[in-house]
Length: 456
Image (tube, rainbow, N blue to C red):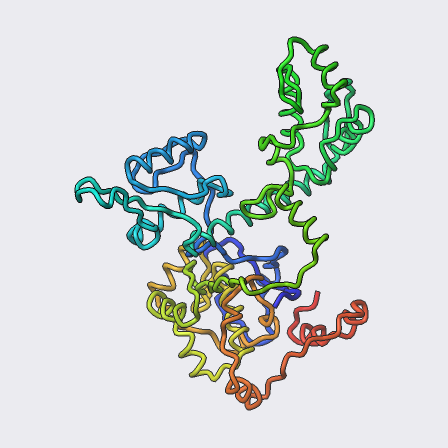
């Protein structure tokens, strides 16, 4: 449902000065300033809130023991010896700290046996000599989703970093072979070393964290180590002669230390650049029909209108909102006779009010969403919807959050269509976008926005 939007955004202050409820076609001065200039996204991490930044140390899954991130092996050893917990394929976890924090929270909510496969050793020995080990791996769907989400977020961060480096014109570097200095874009230095010294580490656009990459290579050369065969020599002259004569002015493709500097290594979970490349080549040589037999679709998780609780069905989410916030979406839909599009507008209206930290029941504004949630629960303002003309407006056809899965789970039955006809509403029909300039002049949205006083 992505579409242009003219949404409100959060602003400071505790309460609206006017305290009025806006009727149809009325936009307050304060609302006119609340423009959301960037797309919003709901948290997508499995189980609820988005995973936060990791602490300076990583906790054990079962106790209060903590280890520095650099001592990951010691933490894994501790969990095996002290708690009999084994994590499979650790090297494939994109963010180990956030992975541990997620499962530590889940283990505090439910028994470990609800998640882990139990492996019994010495099963033929006496009972007192037997031991149960708990295996945490991606066979568990929740673990698989978590690993894929961490990999996705890692890739997004890498691509953003790569784009910044591609556009950066303030790069300063020195050639490792002739000590010539270069200013401007990183590509100038990399192309110089490839052209003048036959040292090619790949296309600049395929590299990420270029400065750290060059520092790593320079450190090896300063330690008199050949970059390709990785032998160490007695002095710089001998090293340079060796790399020139043996044509070793290149990096060792088998050294996994360099994988972090190539974007291709972040593209697929658990696959190196060699595997990805070989699969691509094989597909080019042996075209095959697409096989969808192994397709698995992860369930859509909709987010609560008032907090970060998630559920895989609208029924479960509605039960949560009724129990936790006294908001009965299904009852409101039935009592007001809402069709699908009216439900969409109501959801988008509430999303925007919560994003702006405003109680739609009394129009008060709060410093944080936690304060707003506490107020609405205490005052029971969640079910206190404003006049229908306030939220049943064309502007709320467009989602407040781009990835709002709740909008995809709303009922779209024959009864909704009948109610739509009875209420005299107009069905939303997509417009032809082949001529964008003509569309901007003739779009029906222009007329709707002018009627509501929302034109720029």
